[in-house]
Length: 360
Image: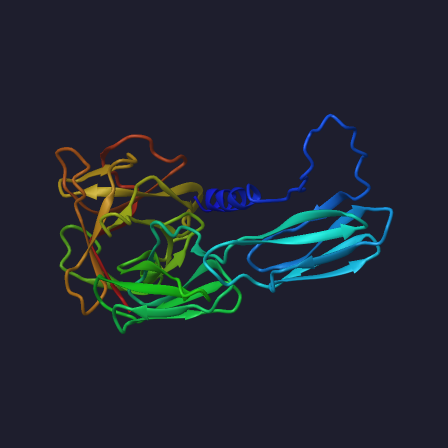
């Protein structure tokens, strides 16, 4: 869309000009070829302005004039040097440079595009901030100072000098929305305003860091164990590498951005089993009636608690294991990763159920 706007802008003004005026009529009489000719020119400028030129061929000395005060010209031999400053108006502009040599003259059109202000996606621009608050940057194009207003005091916006808008949102405990209005006033009095939609909600970044995990070591145990774990950023979008479980490798946890749940999928290869390095330790899901599953569709689901005073998740059945209720994680060490589901065996090395985690 932005590229199309630029093309249209250029075409509108190109149709105005770069022309040579010829007033002679066809009388049937041979007219001598003109001695004053344009051989090269560069007089189409963007909104920032700059320097251009008109090179001519002429047998006599040349002169050049213009009635536009925004066009500056000087002559060097057979070249007319053209300089224009920034165009801070919402519309483009054009002017004529008249070049004379002897009795001949040429009129050249100098074109400058309008001043611009736009974001990379101005038709539907929105930003998502984590609950912990942060500063996000928006690149923009424009050569005039910007002014800002926000719908709420918890949103702040600052225009940088390098074409970047920085928007900062304060920390909060629940979802909320707002708007930022960025505007520019052109020298001709026209004003353009862009609305940036702000949403603050639970996001991937909120879950990074230290947690306290509580769990029962088995379905029949009344003992509650506690362990400090850490959610580290993974190299895969919306996933975490969880350390601190006492395993040889990290546990991969997925953050579901749609429903804000956590998901732990089975068949995760945790590396060699400590007691027998020839075997692999695999994470599975475990059900209330003593079945395990390493099918990729049967995952353990962590649901965010409704309490907004803290950030916590309780793991529960995902409803993905037909006829079964998933209640925890299970570990099995074998020479290969299992490929089917069934009853658990005595090879268990990890057996946790009723898991919950709280952000520290």
